[in-house]
Image 1 (cartoon, rainbow, N blue to C red):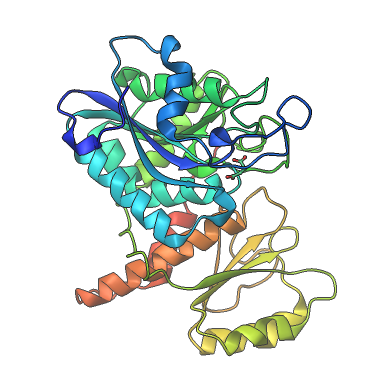
Image 2 (image 1 turned 180 degrees about the vertical axis):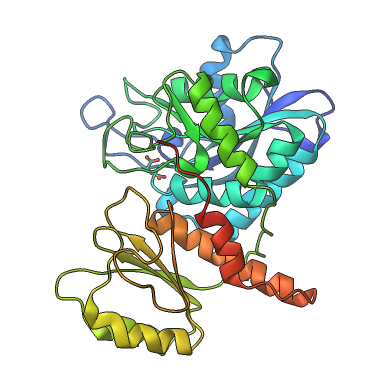
Length: 358
Ligand code: SIN
């Protein structure tokens, strides 16, 4: 195992990128208070040292630290860095596959970001990128990080005919496409994956692979990675009992470029927002409607006709819809620079129709 700069390594290897998180966390008093810990303390290199004896000697692992943070502090600039490193590493013929150790709090955002910016590239090159993390810090007696990391390394290095190249995630012995990963429980060991419709106990069972292939077939072109300081400003607002028009109006006096509206049930928005949302569209603010329930699809025109200029999120949850809208707005800007008249709606619609696993 080595942490030398990946691009200098001249033999075939699996690249393990460290982003921080609980998997790299340390608790001062792990025996009595394993949940009182600081995330992002250990370097990814030392995470690999902990599992060294379980990795086949023939498999070379190289590590690179991209960040070491608690993922609740993830920034758009860091996503851009990670995306660029993943793209460059996929292009490196010595890299057989990638593993990313990440905090689970916002792994959902990173999962969809990598799928939409690198998913098609990984598929074409036939390489797998596997995200993983942990719910317990590295020095807890039941730490789940080592087994998750081993699963991820095994999956990244398994011969290709079992599973196509692409962006995946593994936690608690289950795998899914990374864009389906969603943390929907505060503490359970399988929290990030339990609500993911594409998760599979047997990673390579035929019906699961069929679903993966259907989704990949629908994703035929990656979106550009925004420059670190050029991400369009997009916020998430939740519709709820007692919603007020002021909640929308406040944003109309800002430089916000888009709003993701997390509605109740199937994505219904409070009537109190109606006039303000019409004003938002007139002002050129991009609107996406999703559901605050955390699961299920948000379809157009259900339960009622969508406002012109507001798109339904399909299967995207609010955090994913936000990243997707940012990438779509950025793609529109890049398209216009090259004289193409594609809009954010054209890009977002391609994402929202990606098939859902059942
Ligand atoms: C984090 O997201 O960095 C902390 C929580 C976790 O990894 O589970």
